[in-house]
Amino acid sequence: MIVEPTAIAGCLLVRTKVLEDERGFFLESYKQSAITRTLGRPHRFGQGNHSRSKAGVLRGFHAEPWDKLISVVHGRALIVVADPRPESPTFGAHVMFELGDAPGTRDRVFVANGLGNAFYCFTEVDYWNDVSDEFDPANRGGFAWNDPFLGIDWPTEAPILSPKDQGLTGLSDQHADHPAVRRWREGA
Image (cartoon, rainbow, N blue to C red):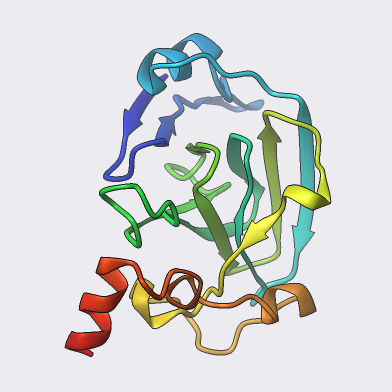
């Protein structure tokens, strides 16, 4: 297993080695020590979550004060992690990963607390995420998936969204006075 940092601090790609034969496959989904070493701090998981979504569904952006380790155990999805932390040098930046059950896409993505993540389902998707704390709806935050400030090239302009996700405001609206948002507005 290889854990690699990405362009956003706190977002890690957990590359898995899949052992396959005529019976099926085996993989280590994570090693706590490898994530801790690359992250540079200890972490733990306190709850596991499993959702199923139809093709065309987009969930997010959700940003909570807990760490997440994401995988797509069935289907194929585009995972996007964005940085909504106003004090971060990568505020407004995003990274993208295609994950799923096809060969070469069984990796996982670690999302540190405070980062936002969303995913779009190319097919029906079973999405699994281990989180570092038990869910508390009072601590759930988010921002609009289609905020032009983020500059994300989604596979569709009309995904299936939950009412809650439809009602999220843009990161650029939430942080309208941030210097990066002001520069973006001046250049738009």
